[in-house]
Each structure stands twice: as structure tokens, then as C-alpha cells.
Length: 223
Image 1 (tube, helix red, strand yellow):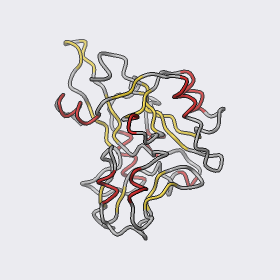
Image 2 (tube, one colour):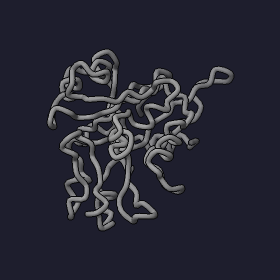
Image 3 (cartoon, rainbow, N blue to C red):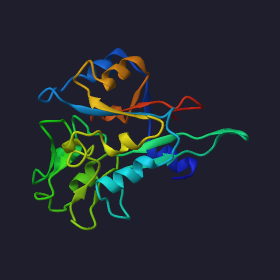
Image 4 (cartoon, rainbow, N blue to C red):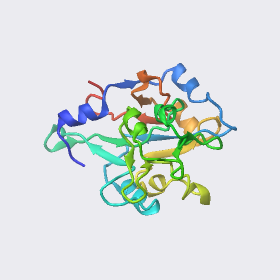
């Protein structure tokens, strides 16, 4: 997905870059029954192929016209022939302190106690769109068929239920995505957080997102 530099900067907002001790400690708080799933998107590995988007749509039967996951491409960085692009994953952040959950009048938006995943119960959703308005990441939408709120759920009702990794993770050809239990110090994601410099999107809002990112290593990563 191509976009102008202005749209790209406005879309990603202000980024908090750095792998501090506080950041790493925060990755293992808010324990929910011993499992709290999160994800790392390695921007230095992502090539913008959108295989993750296609897999998400197929596995979760996402209708045309809406998307649970988008990969946003920056304008070219550098001069021809040495040109690079930065790719930004736009999807639910699965916040530990999720505004969408707080504003839902029916309890349809919730944090799953068994996994820490932020999800939506379509049987309770009345389509009021309060959660869409409250989400600072702008990743929710109304499903055109069910008329209820929808978004990424880390494939909780599809692949995870079958004991598989999320569809986006399995489909990534460059292994740019790592998924696992943030509360398990021996998990791949916990070890990677200890090894890599990461940031979280709009962390200043206090939402405590469980989506981490390894920053793109060429050019600027914040404005």
C-alpha cells in the first residue's frame, strides 16, 4: 500500500523508540492466567509483500472492502538506485488497558481472560461504534455482513483454536513476525524483546499495547 509522506507520518503518529529496562519489565506485567499473547513486527525484515494481509483475509474470511491488517508503505528513502521503503503494520495493538473495552456499553468488547487478547463478541455487539471512536489506533471497523465491530484477534477463533500460529505469522516469508506469550520468559517473543531494540506505537497514551516493533534501520524512525 503506497501513500504520501504526509499520510504516512500522520498515520503512524509519534513513535517511542528504545528498548529500556522499564519497557522490558512492562512486557511481563498484567499476567492473565499465565498467558498474555503479544507480537513483534520486525520492520527491518518486512519487505511489504502483503502475504500477511492475504493470509489474514483468507483464514478469517474477511470481506472485500474492509481489513483487519494493513501494511503501510512509506515514500522512497534514499536515492536511486539505493532506495528503500519502511513498512508499518496497521492492526489492533491488543492493549492491556484498552479504551475500546472501557467504552463498550454491552460488554461486547473484552479482554479474553485465557489469552489477554482484545476481542469482540458479535452476539453482544449492537454496532454503536463507540469502540471505533475510542480506539486511538483506528483499527476497528463495522463488518459489512454481521454489522458488528470487527478487527484483528490474533486468529483467536481460527488458527489459535487449532493450535497454530496466527495466519500472518505463518505466511511471512522473511520471518518478520514473532508471536507468543509475553509472560513466559522463555518464549521466543520474550527472548527477542531482551535482544532487540523495540518500540510501541503511541505508548504515551498509556494503553500498554502488546504489539512491539523492531524499528526500520534506515533513515528516521520518528518525526
